[in-house]
View 1 (tube, rainbow, N blue to C red):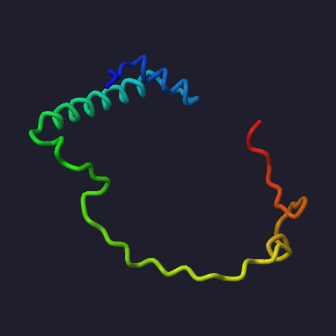
View 2: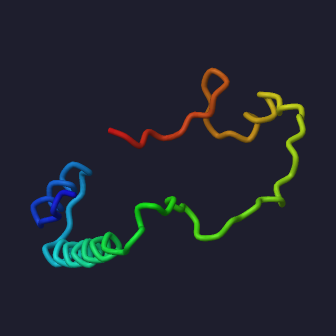
View 3: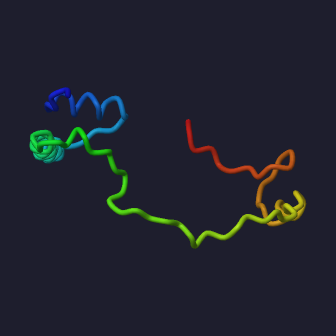
Length: 98
């Protein structure tokens, strides 16, 4: 695993197009150091490689979802009647990306 350094954190932030204060970088660096040590400790556990990875610690059955049943879609005119600004049967929204 790549060693997490302050430069790595700053490079990742630059690539993600955000910046933080030096204090925030230091806090994040310390948290990554703690996580790295915890992962190293987990790697020392005997037999850990023989365990299947888990995404959730408990077996969960989902039985509360309803069955899908086909319904008649709304008519375009009904959808657009409350829209403030429309063009070509679509709702226009303000531009958010320059």
